[in-house]
Length: 475
Ligand SMILES: Nc1ncnc2c1ncn2[C@@H]1O[C@H](COP(=O)(O)OP(=O)(O)OP(=O)(O)O)[C@@H](O)[C@H]1O
Image (cartoon, rainbow, N blue to C red; front, side, top):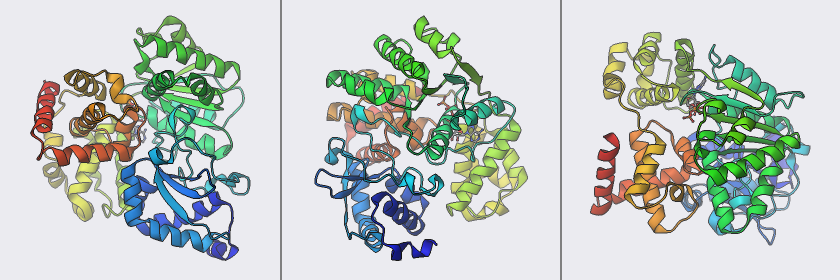
């Protein structure tokens, strides 16, 4: 009875937003919706007015220019109390305000929620929840193969809140083969099954930067509380705490408290805990105390299925039409070195060049379109970590400054340069880069990259910095 929702005149803001956002998504398209609306959340301000809080000022301006009027039309058509929706960015909205009233989860099936539209706003140490989760990384989108079947089964079991599961679960495996995807999928599924549970996903980088900030602001109690009140904690890229002793100690305390309380903990790292030699032995043994699941590199069949799925997803967004021929898919997979991440990069490159001609494309044409991406063979892989360290050193900063929330220009500009270099020199997506920069939203990364692109032609110093850093990194 979707059509009768307007006549029903709702009052619960969360339900109104669910409905309005679903319609808006259909009208403005998936791309703008997932860039600007999905990462935003409706909150009530101190005087009870409803506000759409966007992650950045850039997103706020975009919403004001392109969507606010229509959003209010949709909202007013549904809201029995005829309220209006204002828009503000997270920085303007200030300290955490009460979430919008009346949890819709009691009256709705969880599946009816457009994902992440009512995600809590992460405002400093008190609300790290949902930062960095990506909509598309679900169990449905994950391709099973011999190398990940065990990890997938355990991930699904954990997400179902099944009793008697192993705690903590540690997913380990090389770069780009699906660990983050599985953590995201667990978070979405666990939250769908228990909408009122507190499921927190965060990267170790974000753990560190939030912790450092909490120490500076003397808010460590709030930081501890925000994590220890979790029902499920999903911690990504654990290897990042290697060599950082006070962060390791805090992490150890957090894990011990959660596990003693019977809360679920799932972590991911690039190697098994026992091999993380720069992690202090006591923490290491806690990481390894539950179940360690390998996520092995994807085989050819998995890669073929991932490439097919990716084209289908791009097709749904209207970016390509038709299916790629089997020989085109095979060529893509056989000639793209590296992980699934590189493969996805190659699929995107091909989709962008072939567009509506995808179905007619021959293997030879695909090879020409992919050009250097296929011809070059395996180049030395530059990592985000390397870029951050090189940029920090160049500007006389610490790597942690780039991950921190500090916005002074002396740090913000190098951070944007580092983000720009990550986009240029790695195959990582905007959300993925955001994740590596203290769990920032992908719109922040997009804004940073565009800012540097705009500034380079006009600002010699920035152009020189970028050039020097690129040369240093390419070696
Ligand atoms: N089995 C799979 N099915 C579908 N997509 C996959 C699979 N494995 C990897 N991917 C995709 O490949 C990309 C990289 O995967 P992901 O970010 O999960 O890697 P990771 O193991 O966490 O890497 P890192 O250690 O660098 O963080 C993502 O876009 C993910 O969706």
